[in-house]
Length: 210
Image 1 (cartoon, rainbow, N blue to C red):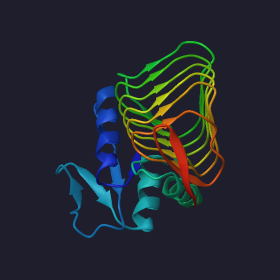
Image 2: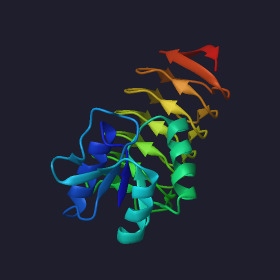
Image 3: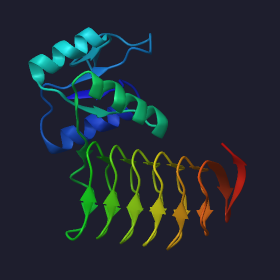
């Protein structure tokens, strides 16, 4: 398994893999940061070129997951590593609680520790659901959405693709949030939000278009 990124959230992805099994044949990729060495925790190799990625895929299988936040960046990295022959994969913490009925979880979803997902929830490709989030029944989370820690999504909500929901935000029941929206930390979203806006506050108000 190749984890894209070698700092921050990538370390949390590694922890989820270690919760499931003893990590084997895991490497990281980072061609941006210059202050990293060749190994993470003196154990996991950090690849720095696309030639190294191709060799790793040939030797260890082509699965990759994204250990970086930011919806637009996650989508860009997905496209990039698919073009290199990668197979998009995700990770789900065994300490997350996921309902038994009607849930659909697409490729490349990262679900972190202590998250709760009830029933009849659809989670799109490449979604990041961070620590201790909750998602209520009959909700739809679009592709590459990021839910920061402690976000609470109520039942019958819809969140459009590439949207970012900040830490400790609450989405009230039956609210629809558009595509490419940023909801600031600690917000309470009480009514629908259109595409391409920044919203913040309790109740959340549109601050500007993006």
